[in-house]
Image (cartoon, rainbow, N blue to C red; front, side, top):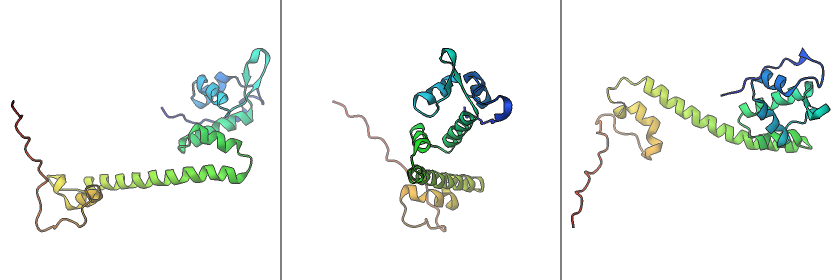
Amino acid sequence: MRARMRLNVGMKSSAQLTIGDVAARFGLATHVLRHWESVGLLAPVRVAGGRRRYGDADLYRVAIILRAKEAGLGLEDIREMLTASDPASRREVFRRHRAGLARRIAEAQISLDLIDRALNCEHDDITRCPNFRRAVRDRVRLPTPLAPSAPSAPPTLPAPSAPRVG
């Protein structure tokens, strides 16, 4: 399930929210906030009895973590981004992530193109549709398009051989 960010900073004054308050505000389980604290992403104030109290800065940090996760960053990259001692180090985290994200977007665009071609295909057999076949040609490593004047049958597999006896 995807967490949704609801940032209502003005409800209580700084360092007054409990872990349950923050979890409810962001639609998270409390153990998620505890885990983020254990890996160095959060550092709420502790009050009597060791109870956590979260302030405005903590709320923004949770929001940043959620947005970064939505962008596909892992917790280690988020920690590195949040604890970077200089902008160059932080930018390097984003550069690494951007390259992977750009690759995934390109792959998703290719998939969307395939679906669009399938939606626009009027052939009874989609495997014979020249437009659809162009979308999958690179997967079968065909060097040139199939001749449109002579539709070819889908490839056939050799018949299985008879079991060997003896």
